[in-house]
Image (cartoon, rainbow, N blue to C red; front, side, top):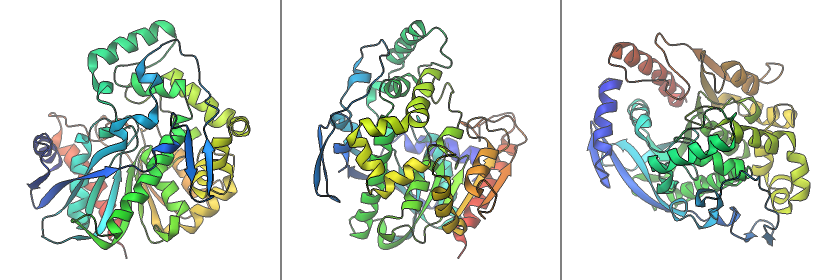
Amino acid sequence: MEYTESYIKLKEVWALRRPKIKFDGTIIQKFTFHSGSTSILPGAGEHWCDQHQVMLSDDFSFSNDIGISEEVIHVKDALVQENKDFDYYVIKPDDGKPSKKVIFLIHGFNEKNWEKYLPWGKAICDRTRSAVVFYPIAFHMQRAPLQWSEKRKMYELSEVRKQKFPNIVHSTLSNVAISMRLHYMPQRFIWSGLQSYYDVIRCIGDFRKGNIEAIDPGCAINIFAYSIGGLLAEILKLTNYEGIFSHSKIGLFCSGAVFNRLSPVSKFILDSEANVALYSFLVEHFDSFLKKDPFLHHFIDEDHLEGKVFHSMLDYQKMRNFREDLLRKSEKDIYAISLAQDLVIPSFEIINTLQGAYKDIHIAVDEMDFDYPYTHENPFPVYPSHPQETDATFNTVFDKVGDFFNQE
């Protein structure tokens, strides 16, 4: 089944929202998950660090005045139920056996539904005979509050935001919720990222305990990540918690550059005001905030390797030797496909990060270009005018992805 046909049919099947669905030689199953990491989020008040046996208090909550008093902004993140208890989905070969190979599929920034990723997961499953886990980043996909998808409400907020910031670029109903949240508290980027990191490890722990019927407890773990999802994939791989990812392969698509080499201002991702606030906090003044915020300092600078690796992925110039040494150790396990016309995560920035300042890290990066109009956000548009070109390109990309994951 070709991409365009697969996209349409999978979208129809997905809309049924059944706990178990058979489709074209595969089976799609739903599993429930409880995040045990919400206490690191703003609004929790206290967090018990088991690693250091210490109770931490979040007593410094930096925020920007964005001139809008809305529950979308001022909600206590730790109490958002959708982000705490949610479902995730697995597509696997319909062979009646628990899968011995697993590939986490990690999506991009500000995504609210899985539709575009369904044929991606199906293609990876078909080519590798792996179970593909559609795993949502914190406050994305099914982990986002439902009100963030209320189009009229979001349109109204965007209009108010445009009045407050007359020079704002790309404020839309699609990105206004996440833009306002991050503009108000840029540190949410760190805490949501770390929660997602801990949740993936906890999910793998469920596999190892035999709690998920579709997955063999001894399964091999790999990751396919797109866009900002690649940042999470890199942190997981380079931190390698308890050796979980020692042999994991990391496939990156339109992904792999450090944070300050991204250009995320887009009507589908972030508006310009949110981007400026994030850059100011995470790049220009991050060291100063670390000195003022003991809670943040503990996770970034006090023997939490995941925090240190996260820190190294924020600014290309800072901690470059540390980051590149870790990448060099994993160079055979990482592979990236970049796109020549990608304006959000430019191909040369992916190469600069993954291959290092002196191009002495041997991570393979394939730069591709397509014979039809595409964007970072929509690399495989379902255009009736040229479905054959899209089908051929899609197959070429995922043949490369499949070949990478199938390598011994």
